[in-house]
Length: 116
Image (tube, rainbow, N blue to C red; front, side, top):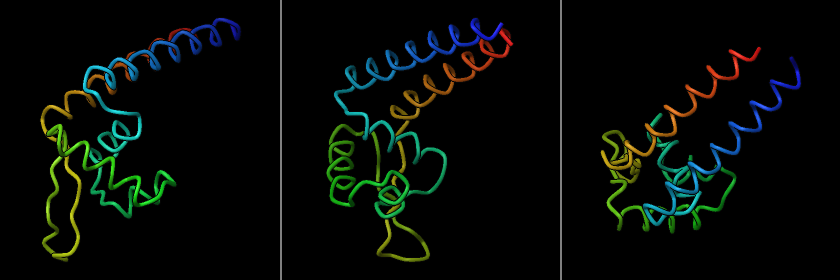
């Protein structure tokens, strides 16, 4: 039974990596940019919070955000409380990418549970 679980985890991991690669290639983005889309779709994120969360420099986050803005995958929304703060918000196009990943995750969790 345990070996079947490891096999299923291996298969799911391989498929997940392939999915991430295909999404990045199709939209001409890198993994960091995809992570920014995913994280910012779940909660309010700005350059500082993304930098802290991903343990990456603010400069690298800012460069990634510029690329996402150019591709119209995110928009910056000004905070109502602090006019100097801008939150990153995925566009509908970016939300579709996140949905693909979320759907895959849900299916792979079910597959893994079925093996257990």
